[in-house]
Structures are given as structure tokens and as C-alpha cells.
Length: 318
Image (cartoon, rainbow, N blue to C red; front, side):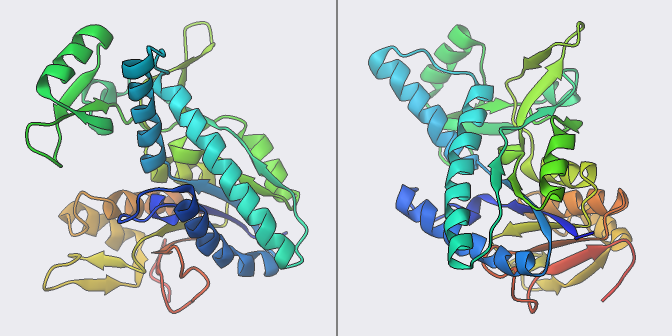
């Protein structure tokens, strides 16, 4: 049986930090990233792709706001915005990947699945809102939106006297349609699933599926996806080629090989900081502890280059 890999594309795989976010920029970044997985297909891997959506869903929320302000178009809730981003990004990934496969003379079906992810509506995250979404507002605008819509705001870390909406970031518990996702991938097809961490939903007292205003961490959701499908390997593609201890400090150190024990110790010591790398390492540890053979964090354009990348396994293994 072929090895099964889940590859999580970070937001920078689609949009770099210094870019405006035009479709031309996103398409070029997407192509540059996806060309890196061709070698895995040629080596016989079955592949499931997941992706981030931070900049894209933020833009959707701002378009919501502009539409309501200028044209009185009702705003759509956050779950619909996440679904919108999954469809748009999934289409872009799928079309780009199809063209790459045509050039490489590889025949595979590619399927994008708009994915719902189950969470607990009583998750403590719903009483401690931390995830910032959407545009920045003045204090007066934020107070009015709190009164009109019941939104919660916190000061923006990016600007003085600016406020930003915050929502919950609950733990992902299960991936809907997981058997189908696995079956499609194991049939030799490429699957794009669980984009942006998935659409957060819960089951009510009658077992019905209901939405929630929340954002699920994409790395945690991708890790859960990899575990649920029984993937052999889990990759997170980001904007740096390695995991670094004390990143951008005088004593910065590349951590090329990590076992679970050392990774957990470093997380507890805070050597990765509370930014983007710590959640990625945590997601890799979850996958390996659940039975995955290895997890790799590397730069989005360097997956094929074996000189780069940090590997996490259960026990130290070069």
C-alpha cells in the first residue's frame, strides 16, 4: 500500500506577508508551492492537502462589512465566510494542481471537499475569545457593533486606538466525511480538505448539526485530519525552512531533528514563543503521539529539497 501523507499549506503558501493579495500573486505562490509535491506523487504517495485561509477569510469579512455599510447587504455569519474561503481556495489549488499534473503527464482526479469540523459548544474557548478576525474599528464603531450584533472586541495589537473582533478558537474533535476523504485518497486521487481549520459545527440535543461563530486552528485541524485518516506522514509548509529555538534571537538554533519528549519540553519552556511556530510543533507532536511515523515542518518552496526541514518523531531518529 502507498504511503499516505497529509500536507498542510500555511497561509504564506498562497499569500506572502509583503503582498497585496491579488489573484495573480496568490496563483503564482500556489503554483510555486504545489510544484514541490510532484516528487511525492512520483514516489507513489497518496496525498491529502489542507490549507490556511487567514488573509482570505479576513478579506471576506471586510467585504461583508463594506457591503452592509454601503449597500445594506446583510452580513453573512463566520461559518459561511469560512465555507466561502474553502471553496475559493480549493478551486485555486485544484485548478493549479491539475495544470501541473498535465505538464508532468500524471493522471489523477482532484477533489475539493468543503469540510465541517465538529467542536464542543461548551469548549472553554467560548468563554475566552482570543482569535482576532476582520478589520480594525474605532472604539465607537466597536461599541455599536457590540450593541447591534453581540460581537466581542479587543484592542488591536497592530495599531493604537483600534479594536478588532475576537471569536473563539475551540479544539477540533472530529472531521465530517472522514471515511470518504480517506477512501478518495486511498483510491489514488488527490483530496483538498479541512481548509482554514474547517467550518466549526456542533451537534445539538437532537443530534442536528449547527454552526458556531468560531475559527479552528488550522494546524490542529490538519493534525487531527492526518490522524483520523491514518496518515503515515504529516507535513506543515510555512515560511521558514526549519524549526528554530529562540527564533531571531542572538542564540537562535536550528532544530533539525526532534523527538516528542524534547519537543514537548521546548514547548513548555516557551523557546518557540507563542506565535506561529509553537502551534505547529504542538500539532506535529499530536500526530506522532497518535501513531504517525513522522511530522515535518519546512518552507513551502523547499519540501522537495531534503537539505531543509525539521523532523519530529516519537524517538530521536536521524
